[in-house]
Image (cartoon, rainbow, N blue to C red; front, side, top):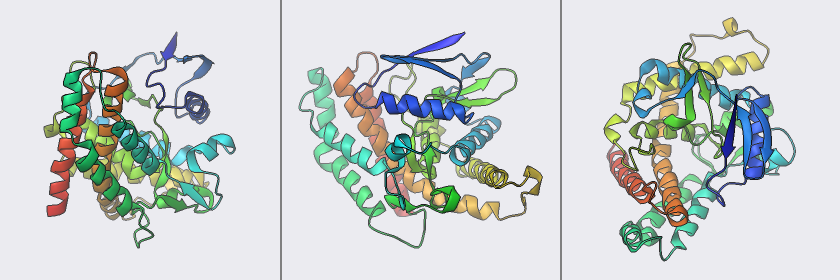
Length: 336
C-alpha cells in the first residue's frame, strides 16, 4: 500500500525543497519511505498499523515520553545534506547557521498586513478586531528585537545566527533541524507496539530545539482537528511536572544519541550527569518560545483565512485563540 499526498498551503511552502528534505529524512530513517514526486504531490509508503494521535493522547505520560525520544532523535541524528538543500535551511555562510524563524515571522506579519479584505465581510470584521497593524505587529517586532539584539551569556538566548560547533554544526547552540509542526495529527503511533513515527515535515527547517518543544506543549490545546474547528482548550496545557518529565527524557535521549554518534555505546553514557539541571535550563528557553509559537501560528492562520476562507475550517477563530493565549501567557511570564 502507498500514500498519495496532495500538496496544500500553496505559496507558503517551497515544495521542491520540502520534497528533497523529506527524501533526506527518509534516508536518515527519520521519515517513512519516499517513493516519488508528481506535479502537485508525492507518493510515500503506507504506515501499516499506525494511527494519528488525538490531542488527548499527548498528555498521556508514556506517549509523551516516546514523542520526546523521537524529537530528540530528529534533532540529534538528522544532518541536512551538504549542497543547495543545506544552504536553503542553514544559510551559505560556513561560519554561522541562519535560523529562519525570525524571517518567517516578519514575512507572515507583512503578508497578513497586506490583506484589506477577506473572503467574507464577517471574516474581514473579525480580523480587524485582532488589530494586526498595531498590537500583534508590535509584539512580533519586540520579540524579534529582543531575541536578535546580540550575543548574551546564555548561548540558547535566541540569536538569529549561531556558531557552528565542530561536527555538531550548531547543535550546541540549540539550533537543529526542527519539525516545527508537531501537532497530534502529525504523530503516528502503532496500535500494537506503540512505536512513534513523525510525519508531515513540510514546515521543517533550521530552528531552536526549544521551539519544537514549545510547539508540542502548545498543541496539547488542540484546535486543528476538523471537529474542533479552531476552538482550543488550554486547560490541557501540560503542567510543570509534565513539562519537566518531557524535557528530562529529551535531554537523556539527546545525550545517548550524541554519545553513540561519537562512537560510544549506549551503556557508556553517564546516567548520573546533571539531567535535572539541563532539563531545567531547557525549560527556561521553552517558556520564551511558547510565546513566539503563538505568534507564529496565529499569523499563519490569518494568512490561511485570506487564501482559503473559513468555510471548511475557521482559521480566524484559531488565530484569535492563539493570540489570546499569547497575551495570557505573556502576562504570566512577566509576573514570574
